[in-house]
Amino acid sequence: MTSKQWTLIAVAVVLGGIGLYLNRDWFARDNIQISHRLRTGIMASMGGGGRFRRNAPNAKPAPNIFFEFDRKLNLTDVRVVAFSDFQTNKYPMPLWHMTSESNSLPTRGFMYGSMIPGMRPNVKGAAPEPLEPDAKYRLLLIAGKFKAYHDFTIAGENPQ
Image (cartoon, rainbow, N blue to C red; front, side, top):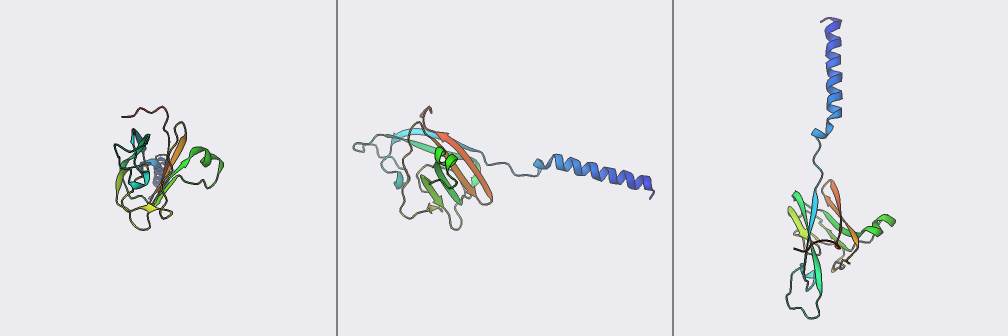
Protein backbone atom coordinates (compact mmCIF):
# COMPACT_ATOMS: atom_id res chain seq x y z
CA MET A 1 0.00 0.00 0.00
CA THR A 2 1.17 3.47 -0.79
CA SER A 3 1.51 6.31 1.65
CA LYS A 4 -1.50 8.02 -0.01
CA GLN A 5 -3.71 5.01 0.79
CA TRP A 6 -2.49 4.92 4.40
CA THR A 7 -3.22 8.65 4.73
CA LEU A 8 -6.77 8.18 3.38
CA ILE A 9 -7.36 5.28 5.80
CA ALA A 10 -6.06 7.39 8.72
CA VAL A 11 -8.30 10.32 7.74
CA ALA A 12 -11.32 7.98 7.46
CA VAL A 13 -10.60 6.50 10.91
CA VAL A 14 -10.19 9.98 12.47
CA LEU A 15 -13.43 11.24 10.86
CA GLY A 16 -15.26 8.08 11.98
CA GLY A 17 -13.97 8.60 15.54
CA ILE A 18 -15.10 12.23 15.53
CA GLY A 19 -18.52 11.18 14.23
CA LEU A 20 -18.91 8.58 16.98
CA TYR A 21 -17.78 11.08 19.62
CA LEU A 22 -20.27 13.73 18.47
CA ASN A 23 -23.10 11.18 18.37
CA ARG A 24 -22.22 9.26 21.52
CA ASP A 25 -25.74 9.71 22.86
CA TRP A 26 -26.88 7.11 20.30
CA PHE A 27 -25.29 4.47 22.52
CA ALA A 28 -26.44 5.83 25.89
CA ARG A 29 -29.58 4.62 27.66
CA ASP A 30 -32.41 7.08 27.92
CA ASN A 31 -32.95 8.97 31.14
CA ILE A 32 -35.72 7.73 33.40
CA GLN A 33 -38.85 9.78 32.73
CA ILE A 34 -40.99 10.31 35.85
CA SER A 35 -44.46 11.84 36.00
CA HIS A 36 -47.03 12.16 38.75
CA ARG A 37 -50.81 12.25 39.09
CA LEU A 38 -52.72 13.74 41.98
CA ARG A 39 -56.02 12.42 43.31
CA THR A 40 -57.87 13.71 46.36
CA GLY A 41 -59.63 11.30 48.72
CA ILE A 42 -59.93 10.32 52.34
CA MET A 43 -56.85 8.50 53.55
CA ALA A 44 -57.32 6.22 56.52
CA SER A 45 -53.65 5.55 57.09
CA MET A 46 -50.67 6.48 54.95
CA GLY A 47 -48.70 3.64 56.52
CA GLY A 48 -51.41 1.10 55.69
CA GLY A 49 -50.58 0.80 52.03
CA GLY A 50 -52.33 4.02 51.01
CA ARG A 51 -55.79 2.43 51.07
CA PHE A 52 -58.97 4.49 51.16
CA ARG A 53 -61.48 4.37 53.97
CA ARG A 54 -64.61 6.19 52.83
CA ASN A 55 -66.26 7.06 56.15
CA ALA A 56 -63.26 7.78 58.30
CA PRO A 57 -64.26 9.87 61.34
CA ASN A 58 -62.74 13.37 61.40
CA ALA A 59 -60.81 12.55 58.24
CA LYS A 60 -59.94 15.33 55.87
CA PRO A 61 -59.15 14.98 52.18
CA ALA A 62 -55.56 13.95 51.69
CA PRO A 63 -53.74 14.07 48.38
CA ASN A 64 -52.82 10.74 46.84
CA ILE A 65 -49.82 11.14 44.59
CA PHE A 66 -49.11 8.38 42.10
CA PHE A 67 -45.69 8.37 40.42
CA GLU A 68 -45.25 6.71 37.02
CA PHE A 69 -42.19 5.80 34.93
CA ASP A 70 -41.68 5.36 31.21
CA ARG A 71 -40.55 1.75 31.74
CA LYS A 72 -40.46 -0.93 34.44
CA LEU A 73 -37.74 -0.38 37.04
CA ASN A 74 -36.22 -2.54 39.77
CA LEU A 75 -36.09 0.14 42.45
CA THR A 76 -33.40 -0.05 45.11
CA ASP A 77 -34.01 3.27 46.92
CA VAL A 78 -36.97 5.69 46.98
CA ARG A 79 -37.03 8.94 48.96
CA VAL A 80 -39.28 11.98 49.14
CA VAL A 81 -37.71 15.08 50.68
CA ALA A 82 -38.84 18.66 51.11
CA PHE A 83 -37.26 20.66 48.30
CA SER A 84 -36.17 23.43 50.70
CA ASP A 85 -34.32 20.87 52.83
CA PHE A 86 -32.73 19.43 49.70
CA GLN A 87 -31.39 22.87 48.73
CA THR A 88 -29.94 23.69 52.15
CA ASN A 89 -28.76 20.31 53.46
CA LYS A 90 -26.29 17.88 51.96
CA TYR A 91 -28.22 14.97 53.53
CA PRO A 92 -31.87 16.06 53.93
CA MET A 93 -34.19 14.12 56.22
CA PRO A 94 -36.59 12.10 54.04
CA LEU A 95 -40.33 12.34 54.61
CA TRP A 96 -40.64 8.83 53.18
CA HIS A 97 -37.79 6.39 52.53
CA MET A 98 -38.05 2.87 51.10
CA THR A 99 -35.11 0.55 50.36
CA SER A 100 -34.54 -2.88 48.88
CA GLU A 101 -31.79 -5.13 50.22
CA SER A 102 -32.02 -7.65 47.40
CA ASN A 103 -34.31 -7.48 44.38
CA SER A 104 -37.49 -5.48 44.22
CA LEU A 105 -40.15 -6.45 41.72
CA PRO A 106 -40.12 -4.43 38.48
CA THR A 107 -42.72 -1.67 38.65
CA ARG A 108 -43.97 1.16 36.44
CA GLY A 109 -45.21 3.25 39.36
CA PHE A 110 -46.30 3.54 42.98
CA MET A 111 -48.35 5.73 45.30
CA TYR A 112 -46.71 7.94 47.91
CA GLY A 113 -46.76 6.18 51.27
CA SER A 114 -47.73 2.77 49.92
CA MET A 115 -45.78 -0.45 50.22
CA ILE A 116 -43.73 -1.11 47.09
CA PRO A 117 -43.35 -4.86 46.36
CA GLY A 118 -39.87 -6.04 47.36
CA MET A 119 -39.08 -2.88 49.35
CA ARG A 120 -39.38 -1.96 53.01
CA PRO A 121 -39.16 1.25 55.05
CA ASN A 122 -35.55 2.25 55.68
CA VAL A 123 -36.34 2.61 59.37
CA LYS A 124 -38.41 -0.30 60.71
CA GLY A 125 -41.95 0.78 61.53
CA ALA A 126 -41.51 4.29 60.10
CA ALA A 127 -44.60 5.84 58.52
CA PRO A 128 -44.47 8.45 55.76
CA GLU A 129 -44.95 12.05 56.78
CA PRO A 130 -48.06 13.81 55.42
CA LEU A 131 -47.38 16.20 52.55
CA GLU A 132 -48.35 19.84 52.99
CA PRO A 133 -50.20 21.85 50.35
CA ASP A 134 -48.29 24.70 48.67
CA ALA A 135 -44.97 22.98 49.34
CA LYS A 136 -42.45 21.70 46.83
CA TYR A 137 -41.00 18.21 47.16
CA ARG A 138 -38.39 16.11 45.39
CA LEU A 139 -38.69 12.39 44.65
CA LEU A 140 -35.26 10.71 44.51
CA LEU A 141 -34.95 7.27 42.91
CA ILE A 142 -32.18 4.74 42.53
CA ALA A 143 -32.80 1.80 40.23
CA GLY A 144 -29.59 -0.21 40.01
CA LYS A 145 -26.95 2.08 38.52
CA PHE A 146 -29.50 4.69 37.42
CA LYS A 147 -30.42 7.71 39.54
CA ALA A 148 -33.31 10.07 38.84
CA TYR A 149 -35.35 12.78 40.53
CA HIS A 150 -38.72 14.44 40.04
CA ASP A 151 -39.86 17.73 41.59
CA PHE A 152 -43.55 18.13 42.40
CA THR A 153 -46.00 20.27 44.35
CA ILE A 154 -49.52 19.60 45.56
CA ALA A 155 -50.96 23.11 45.14
CA GLY A 156 -52.42 24.08 41.80
CA GLU A 157 -52.94 20.48 40.66
CA ASN A 158 -56.32 19.39 39.31
CA PRO A 159 -57.63 16.38 41.23
CA GLN A 160 -59.02 13.64 39.01
